[in-house]
Image 1 (cartoon, rainbow, N blue to C red):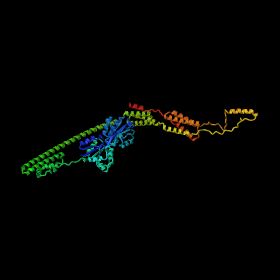
Image 2: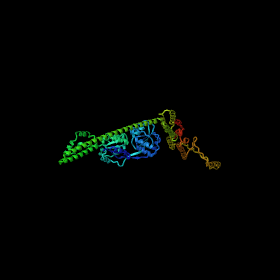
Image 3: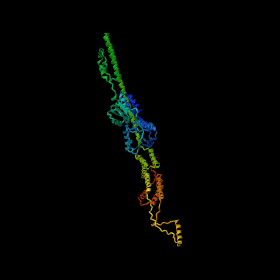
Length: 613
């Protein structure tokens, strides 16, 4: 009996095992992987709400996501790799998913609705790793792809290299594999002897991708059989088609071997008395006799041999030899009649089986024709739905554009959403006026340049760090003119009047002293404390300009820059390089256009409302 090993994760191989056992195979469940559900972040789940297309890689992806109960756009187009995955999608989300003819990544990419996805938001619900070609191709086609990883496959704790010896002792002929991760788990850490035995087994895989991965393990192509998918029916069909090459052939026991057990002359003589026509008929039909017929023939011949042997003993005893021969001849005739009845029953059974197979074939053909008609009708309905424009989708995109404009102040994002809306409307007639309004809004948004807040802030910071390097505009005062003290008192008593005047002059000098310097007008002179206060005032103005920039207060920004520029121009040397650099930087900063809240009105909003109505 052919022994098939099913390596699918726990809970997924029971139905296939039951099918195989009913068909006469020996089936064993041996999960080499376990499925662990993950909890994605809200950021990873949020694209599901605005997705245009959602692709589910497997049944586990659908089950894991449904348990999270996320907000999902049920108006999006759903895709499933296989029919069973599509059935679970309908059970969990109530949405019919598109299924490719070929249940793999290549089949999905061949779908017409996934051929042109430029600008579409696509969410790939999958497990960790696997199917990189699908994501890569969709990105190359211009789609905005988001991966939503909801589960992972891990080797079970029980899988060890010693299990291959156990499989060999159990006479395993074929192994069912439905993922590359299962291949890794089975072929990990094997000895040369174990690897040699495993490479000689037959493998039933779910796709060309797994077959190619198996070939990397030096498994011959002749030992790899590719099913039409990972479903139980597809796997069973693949195994059953190859079953004739693996099933054990039982050799039927022939009449010649049975008659050889007759070890006495009397039995041989009785056998010779069988009609020649009956013997020839038996030889012609012995290959058609089933195992049950062969067993019946063997039993009958043994019984006949026993009877012959009994009569042979009687003949040796010299009692009723002729009577024994006649009775033996009658027994042989009865045996021939039993064989004829057995052949007739076998013929009737074969005819019944043929009629049953014919009925089954007719039923399957009728069911296939009915399914084909239903599929054709569903495709026509899907094409009709795809060719019509959904007003809700148009309104949703327009509202998204308004949200990005007024709530997020994201002008580039608003332009991108409107471009996507224009691409959607371009495939349908009667939308010229709406598209013209959309193009006008796109041009207006693209002309708006966002304020380079970070760059301006860094320029202000550079000016702030240069204030301490400025040179004050102080002058070098000329030396004081040496003066002769005219109020010197005389020792001559006759000069008492002059001495009186000089005394009065000294008295006045104690209140006010005048110093004379040579040269023109003298500039005011600042001490160290006054210089420090000037520097701190300029830095304060620059810091206020930075705060005004971050809080989007344009008037305060320009007024503080003007005050800082005035102080630099008034107190510092204009011919100094540091002063010139600071003044030039402030002048450039004053030229910035700080239009934080431009007034933008979307012309397309009213046009879309009128078109929807």
